[in-house]
Length: 178
Image 1 (cartoon, rainbow, N blue to C red):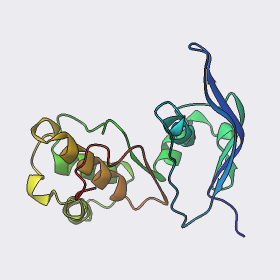
Image 2 (image 1 turned 180 degrees about the vertical axis):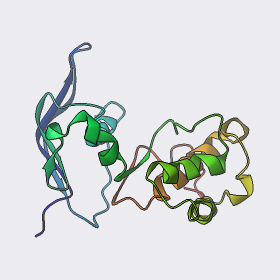
Image 3 (image 1 turned 135 degrees about the vertical axis):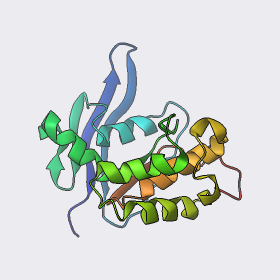
Image 4 (image 1 turned 45 degrees about the vertical axis):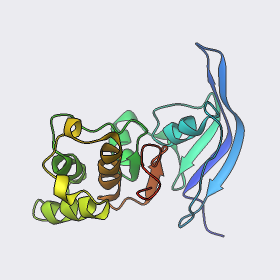
């Protein structure tokens, strides 16, 4: 079998300030093309596992590998480039409040250096994909929580990342939309 795109090797994360053991001795391999769900109760460490891939959290012990590289060896200057390879749908959306739905999605394309001519079609297509093309000019505050979540999904998808991570992406959506 080919090399995993994501690998956790004996990963433990302890939040020392609160003495909380978020993860303990996790070993996991995820290969290209796999669709994986992390299921567990609140506080089980699901978000911590995702944040390890973004290097927003560091393991207390063990190693996290992405595309054959140990993330611990990444220099700080390389981190933004690493994160551009990951589409992330955050639990709390993290939309830019002063930008419209369209601008929030287009911003992701600008960050990765997409050709300016391609941005309008790709951003509009991503909003259409999540059923929000008609709300393209709305600011986040003018959208429902579920609509904000869908803009976050469009923003994560628009760059066609090799890896898409989603932290409770359907938690604020009705059953049909989810």
